Image (tube, rainbow, N blue to C red; front, side, top):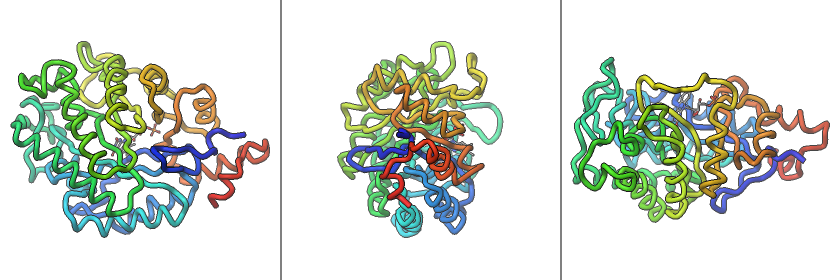
Length: 342
Ligand SMILES: Cc1cc2nc3c(=O)[nH]c(=O)nc-3n(C[C@H](O)[C@H](O)[C@H](O)COP(=O)(O)O)c2cc1C
């Protein structure tokens, strides 16, 4: 029996299979951040193609939290209606849908907005990056509030769960790393202090919406004295106690140049997902150059992860889950729950 095509549960919500579409920015929104016909087709086609869980791309919780001028947004109540079109099309086609709540921090790519970060250290000297201003304690309270308001809108728009973006060198990730966080107050210095904002955001979101929560992290920064896999395992244990349901295990993105970044070979991040799953005792989503149903199946068989995310593979073939069903059909690996999904 195929494990990839078996039902999976995240915080009480049942997915018809273990195939996840990870968040991927499409840069197709207008400056108001509303999803449009492109997004409906883009996400709807993946739902129709059999994906169990779709995680909508980085969606800004406030305008200065955009990576580009064309990011999706969920910073205003008007966004609820346009996001409902995405949740409706995915639900109609049997998929569950989450939205990635994001703040770009020092990697803000909008000329009209001023970047903010834990400390006034630029991501890079090259455009579009600028030296960010360090957030005051009062502004940090405002950021937490914006995450909560965004999560409430996500719930109102019928998302099944939310993903908090704590990876790839964006705001929450910047707080984690001692290389980008040089604060001397309660949000900087010790490991506990650097994790504080992500933890507070996660707890506040969970309390506000009581839906399943995924946190995406970069397991490794690939820099000497930077954030590493041991830190990620320790963080995952704390996130679990805060009510997080799954860790989505990515890597990199917090430094313009990294020192030890591996070659991007198939499954290059899978071992991090395995370690977090076993040593952090929390379910994981593995991601990173996983391209075939057989590879995903092997990861689940090897207890590397609980869910498998296919990013660029789904952009190439939105019917990847159907292809998996076809591939496993002949070997009688297709479970009844998957047949019901169509
Ligand atoms: C075009 C593109 C946009 C992306 N945008 C996001 C994003 O919005 N949020 C995020 O956490 N990761 C983003 N990623 C990273 C993917 O979610 C994924 O981790 C990465 O592509 C590796 O998986 P893959 O090899 O299966 O594509 C993006 C990747 C691509 C290719």
